[in-house]
Image (cartoon, rainbow, N blue to C red; front, side, top):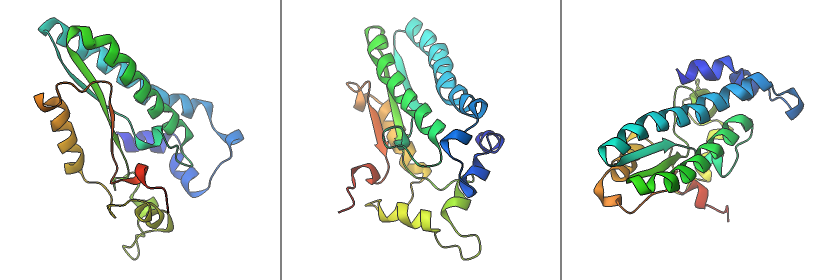
Length: 181
C-alpha cells in the first residue's frame, strides 16, 4: 500500500524530525521514483497497447499539485510527480494519432490515513499548524474529498472532454491559484 511505502521510506519520521538535503537517502528517493514514474509508465504502456488495438481510449494519470509547487519535506515525491506531469504531456502528443487521450489529475490536499497526523491534532480533533496553514491558503476552505476527484475523473473519461489531451488538471480547491494577498 502507499502507507507502507511511505513508512518504508522513513518519511513519517522525516516529517516529524526534518532532515537536510545532505541526509536524504538515495535508495528512498529512487523508490519514490519507481513507484510514481515507472509505475505510471508501465501501466500506461500496458493499457495504451490494448487501447490502440481497439482504436482509442483514455488514460488518466495521477500527478499532484506538488509537481508544480514543490512541498517542503517531500522532495522525491514532488520531483516524481513533476515527472508524471511531464510524461503525461509527452504521451498525449505521442498517442493522439492513435486516438488515445492522456491527461492527469493533480490533487491538492486531501485528508488521508497517510497525512492525517500531519494535518490534524489527534487530541483535539482540530487542525495542526500545518493543516491550518493549508486551509488558510485554500480559497474553498477545506480539504478535498474523494468525490472531488471522482467528478474530474468522470469528466476526463467522458466524451464531454473529447478534445482535451495533455492536460494536468488541478483539483485543489484553489490552492494553486491563491497568491496569499
